Image (cartoon, rainbow, N blue to C red; front, side):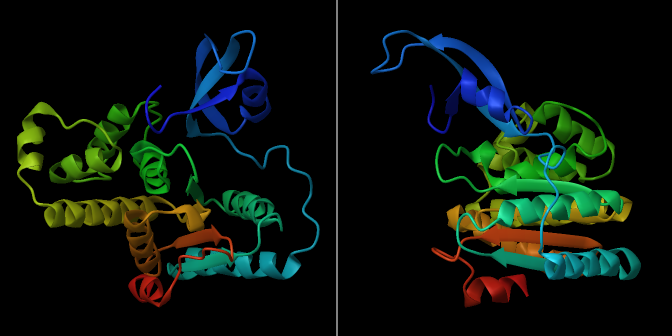
Length: 262
């Protein structure tokens, strides 16, 4: 096992496989267990949690507000950022599932990512998940290398931004780009990733309106928070609805974040 990897038992994986993807790791010995345990290594979130969801009860005011945001994005081409903050267990995820269903029914492309409180490596970050989803939106590649190449081929990312797209997806740099990237300072890299993220979002939004969902912002690290503020700032000028969820406790959205997000 490597740092950042997350393993679950076969029983748990069977219960959540509709919304996650993983690799069968066979049986491993676990301290405290008499016999080896079949386990899976979690790799990504996938699927649609709303497919078998029970009907939502109440929340009609919130649903009307969300429908208004969808209508504005579609009709006027201007987006909104919606910050959904509440105590744990009050139903944020179920409400967001309904948001996804409504947006999908209205023809919105839905992209999402989740901030994790444990076992998160660079390629499991919420921003990486969003980039992975948008970069693969023009072609059904299953590996990140293929997604990156398809994003350039389909005009979602400029060829000179491929080096930054590889960084956002936590991919090894291609041989002809590695030396160039190594020579960049941190600010140049950060600026390049911001520009690549903004370009990818803009060009995806030109093809269809977008719903972006970022869940559990209270677990986000500082670099992710800055990238999400940029996404929120970019959304207002295009048909994009950005939904962010967080708990009241450890709420990271302060005055500076709001300023950056406009």
